[in-house]
Image (cartoon, rainbow, N blue to C red; front, side):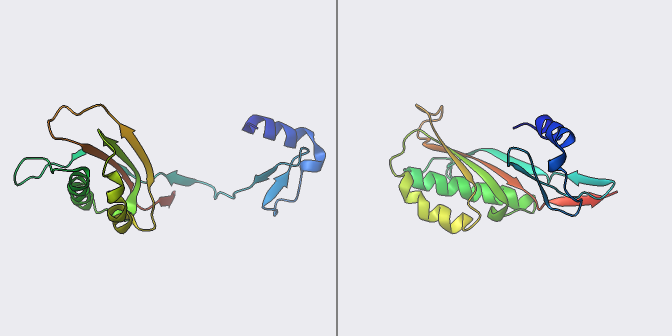
Length: 155
């Protein structure tokens, strides 16, 4: 049901009108709408979003990829956490993680690592499979999306 239809129902159907103090309204079709009180001149700013792409498992010291998916993902996550720290963010701020893999063998061994790192935050996760990467030996790539704490400003 779209918003225009709901508004139309409330304007045309008198039983849908309830006192302003109520927290929700019932429509004639027994649907309800939650009412949110906004203060006048309240400006909502979405929190800044940080996106870190192309995190690979390349070891900075040797310039080579780890031998398996686990080592590459561990290295990519370590690099990602370091980049997040530059923005004052942690793993708890991560809202989305995308894994791009050329093979899934060994990916399940990463679950304890992911659980330890992200704990209860449980970011939305996408797993994408590709035939191969351009770099020989590369098995994984990660993209992280993180948000700072939500801000609300009254003007």
